[in-house]
Length: 285
Image (tube, rainbow, N blue to C red; front, top):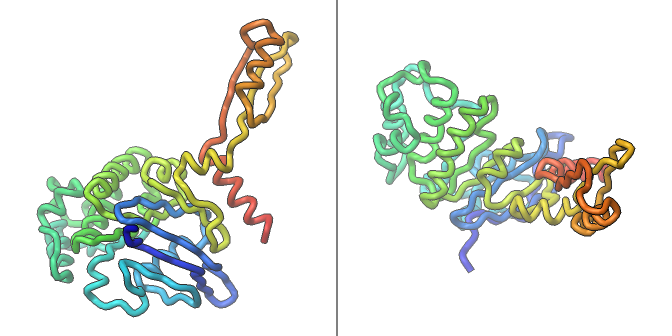
């Protein structure tokens, strides 16, 4: 069995009276894009900080690339790239100067010019960071996250504040990195983003994982009931939730003698499933 890139069991972290992580389990396989979903305050950023070695845990076991982030050395850190929500590049340097500067921190960095091209900033290589658009700055942050040639890339809500066009352009970059073999952990609260990018999702609420699986598996497991809508002959709209929509439609067709007026069958979206999962967790607290 291929060794896990990330193996977390029972991860706990408190900030005073606030419980940020309450027994979180998390596995990430080589080459996988894993999406960590959850509302604000669910513990996603804290988890990223622990995996990267910037935050000390209060309990549980954590292995990232075969080492404990709390005690791993410099060589290990060069294999873990990270893109935080906040921009990290100095405003007065050019894009090329910035990437070359950060490359010096790593024993075997990527070629800076190739990295700039990878993130689509060739035309802006001589521009100062402060002159870049928001989307271009995030691309630069990704360049800084991958300049060391990491085996694992941590993305902490990287598209917060993006407009829809910039977000989709950023998705193309993440897919390119994933296709190149980079293992990625993506935290986000955008359901469309998670569904577009992640091979597997882990839904976190109140500091613990409440469900995990591919987007389709989560829909199938937690959103099996479909809604069938139709219109009665007198114009009354009707609907029924059912786990067997084909049978319901067949029964309606028999009753109507053929076509069913206003027939519409809808299945739960990933958002419906997600809201149900985190809602159930809140009710349990």
